[in-house]
Length: 235
Length: 235
Image 1 (spheres, rainbow over the protein chains, first blue to last red):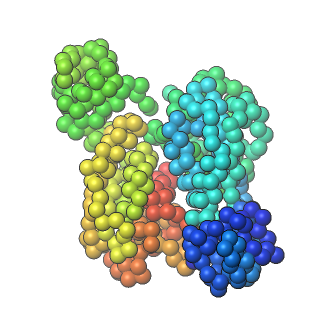
Image 2 (cartoon, rainbow over the protein chains, first blue to last red; image 1 turned 30 degrees about the horizontal axis):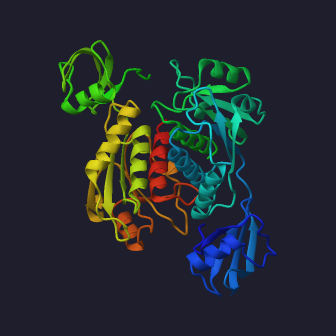
Image 3 (cartoon, chains in turn brown, purple; image 1 turned 120 degrees about the horizontal axis):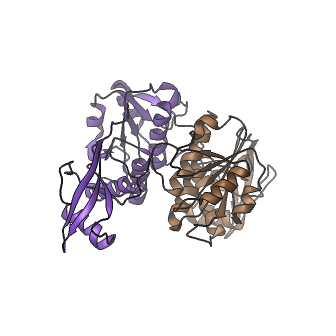
């Protein structure tokens, strides 16, 4: 079900809230030019969906009356994508937008031996994710983390762990090895792929090598195809 | 299996070819700075994969010796995506790149009542698709067509026909109604969605309304998710 009211994100919103944050007030009043009597939808990014009506507006502040509040339940599985940032930053931002639209719980950027980018702008990435959350009217905000070391990701103990790698001997497809309704940690390498040593270390740490299909995918496409595959396994 | 040699597209390549086109000679000699003795891979975009060795180079011409030629078989199903071009052209180009990476047979741009863009640059789109074909080392070049009228798409008689629409009453998910191993025509609307009259006309013409999942997707995301769903149905 999609709401027709403008959709807002405010981390501290509750069923008792009476006003919008400065940022969302600005968006409501200056960008969308909403008026008293207009209805809006808000989420706190952790599952709460609030429908509210604008009651009073001043120069910079927007007071609201909550009409209804509903806590939504999360998916019965959790997707954590750990991926090397792409050299071209737009490709990573595009991926974050698409992952938010179709659903992901956490994205962690990982430093690998062949990474072509070390620095990332987390604040910018979070802005992209919030924008996509609002646009696609979702109530669970993906957590964006990093950069972390390859070793740190290997030490992660959460659920089923997979590594995508362009192997001469293609391993089993992700869809055949992922079990439904669990937590997944999916590791995707940089444009130049993981080194053999990295793949061996990941296997040692309990990661299963998987294929994502018959075609050769860019890093950001592989990240998205992997997450989409996990959604399908659970559908 | 991925080839490690640089990958070229030349529509008229055959197992008897002895030289690259002017465009691909330029790419080989000026961009990649290849030399006699270097190996390359080429496709004609209709399933032929040729491995060749550069033999002679002049200022603008690159002569080759074909080492092997293999005609690959197409997928046992056909995906035709008919979609409204997005207002922001980058979004459509991104979608074409991703569809080429993961596989699509034809993309036709459709004019609809709420389309926010009438003109498209087919030559530019074809360039994007050829670039993605080479990058992802595929041998079947997607056909890019349009713009065509909504009525013309409705008259298309190929295989199973679906229309994606943001419905108050979500219909069955595409994955539950698509039959494996057939031809699909998937129709996706513009940012403002199809009109009710368009949806009714499509149903009259034999299109089945389908859902693409629980989240609200942008036009270009919906196009990609639909094609990915059809790949899964056939996997």
